[in-house]
Each structure stands twice: as C-alpha cells, then as structure tokens.
Length: 184
Image (cartoon, rainbow, N blue to C red; front, side, top):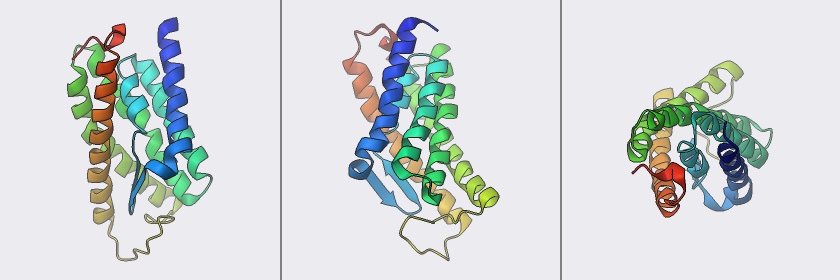
C-alpha cells in the first residue's frame, strides 16, 4: 500500500469511528427495527476511491464506531454486526472502481448488496444469539414478522445508502484535485 493510501485510510478510519460516536444521537433516524446515522457511510463510500484494502479497513472501522456509540447492549451488538458488513460492500465497490467502473455506478451497485448484507447480519444475530429483532429500539413489536423486519431493513438501508452516497459524491467532486477522484 502506498503511503498516500495509508494517510487517506487513516483519516477516513478516524471519521468512520468519529461520526457515530460524536454525531450518533444528533444524526440518528429510528424507524424500528431500522436505525440510521446520517453520514456514517460517507467515509466508507469515499474509501472505495482509494483502494480495496483501504475500503475494507474503513468499513471495519465503522463497526468500532458503532460499538463505542451504542455499547455492549443487544442493540449495540446488532448495529455493530450491521456495520461490520460495510467492509464487504465497500470492497465490492472498490474492486468495481479498480476495474474501471465509475464512482457513480459503484455507489448505485453497492446499495442492494449493502441492504442485503445488513438484513443477513440482523437475521444471523437473531438466530444465532437469540437477540429479538426489535430489542432496544423502544418498540414492542411481538407481531413483527421476519419478512416485515427484513423489508424494513432492506429498503431503509438502501435509502440511507442513497443519502450518504449523495453526500460522498459531492465531497468527492469537491476534492477533484486529489488524484484518486479523477473518475466521474
């Protein structure tokens, strides 16, 4: 990895941890069982422009940020598991860009993967660890079906991805003088 990539990765990692910890309560949207912290994906989305390794590193850093933000609670573990999936879709997006895809197309293509992976993470946490799907959200939803929860998470995550993609795209365009933002 180039020193420049390490430096960009370090800054984006710091932001990936800082955003949920510092702004989590301010920028949080809660539509149980879905939750979102606006701008929390921006460092991950920008890291796709640097390199696949940096994308994975920054993707994993968001899990640390959410664990610090929510703590060792059932909701905290659920959200940390969701955030850990950022490394997978960020890697996919970074590989697309490395192979010549535009930044915009990588942002769009990773949205459904992002939503799907977060649904899988929540369902695995519920199945493996027995965590209730709505635990800690402040909503008693004993009649919530797995399908309902999955759809809310899928479409909520994709909408959150779209909002953060728009922010990341603007930031990338504003930083266009930086060599790694020459696409788009």
